[in-house]
Length: 420
Ligand code: UD1
Image (cartoon, rainbow, N blue to C red):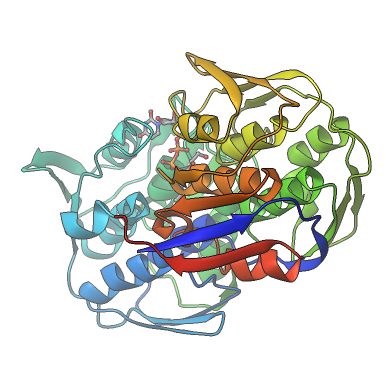
């Protein structure tokens, strides 16, 4: 098991290329089940979550191979409609196969994902939405067993805006007979990118980029190539790293529109941000100002940036509140940040961060992907040596993070850890 060892105190400087979006790729890969064929997905990040999705699709009969950042995916021989627990428990995004399997085979058996490190993550909206399209769904021995010989269009309102449920129901609706109206659909860039990909495959979808999607089902879709959108969460993490270390970093391969909320908030903290078509440069020459942040659905601050923002605010001159309205229990990073000397208290869905105290390096434990990122950020500024254990969480969603940070001047390396 690996750990990351960081000597804090260096200023980040230089240019970093942001990888393709994990969550974009994990939505588009299952969509390739919809039409048997050969796909080439460029700008694919080399991440363990992508390997996990490949393994799941391969177990169903697909062939996949990652060559550089090109993922070759052949779904012609897929002949199984089952996603076993062993895959879904390691990665919730495996649940995305439910909609495409139903659309392709008229049936699916997909393990329920269960909770995750920061609490329960229900899938009721995925189920209700698919039922509205005519699927009969039973829960048997921890599995969703779904049957829909004739998926038919319907109306469905997502009571809560959900990235995963919107993706799943959309992927089924594109092949359902007749028209479907989805309201309060998620508009996160990865969902919009999925919808555009489906249109490229031959789907008929109106309202892409809005919360109301009108879909006219089609009989046939075709395999097409696609470029995965840039990872806005990785980008936000590097933007915060640049500002926290009083650095000067240019991010390339980004879509600034996807980062508008983060850019706005960071400017309030005193960061200077230059935005171009697909680059963002962050410079910080001042004291970091405390700025409250509340996560919300797109176009707000993403919950996937909450842990990193909490770490950022530790170095601000004053107190700030960090509120998570999406996953209200998502504060597993706080006790670990406290091991570095952080002054944070959590009450309900709010962290009160008292910034300005100097932190000192320590061994800390990753609990989930974004929590790990926040520990690395804090380690970059803390005095002395920080060891971040259980970095396999990080490898799920950050491609070569230590190489990218090293190239920017950070003192960070990967070592073997004895601890599990
Ligand atoms: C996706 C992302 C994850 C990110 C999260 C929030 C992927 C693979 N994962 O997860 O990285 O942290 O969005 O942006 O893209 N909800 C329900 N019932 C449901 C589904 C969701 O009540 O059936 C609730 C959730 O509890 C949560 C909210 O809806 O409060 C948003 O969840 P959702 O957008 O679905 O998150 P995920 O798709 O799980």
